[in-house]
Image (cartoon, rainbow, N blue to C red):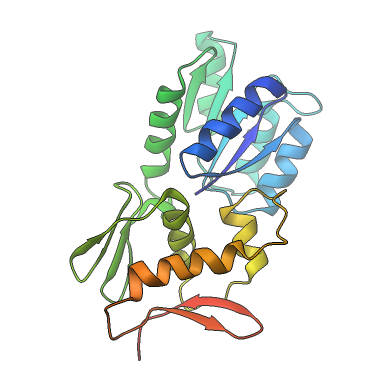
Length: 224
């Protein structure tokens, strides 16, 4: 899953980035509302953590613009303002939840899981491909009924590939969605993780689901 953090407090933003990365999320950070809105409109995110008091555009303005443009991405508002009026305003504008600062990181994770489970958010629905099933809510993967243990990054990569099933995705697309957008992509990181997945998902099965498209990228598809 990929999360956008829109927060002008650099110390808090760094804490959120590190904590979310340790949980297996890809994380982008915007330091003001204008940058946050631009990223939210140009990139596919599974959720947005949005501060209210931001330079250039407030969190309320960002949220209003997202909803006006029919962006259904789940939004968790973060703010030092704890008044009922502010919470009501955020929820009325289309926020999925509201968390007042200071907050416990475990609670933030729980609320993040909750808003990304709510329908009609597609990324949290059960993903199926032939006899392979991935459950984002339970963070479980099974093939032919057998549970497959994956690391956080392996899970994120497989989930992305399954959401894009039958579509060729490039190495750059994978790096942008599964890893941080500022990651230096000079290594063979994607290839290494694709091989990890092949060993865990395809090895021992006659039908292979993960395929390399030479010169283009990778695709997961059911056998014909």
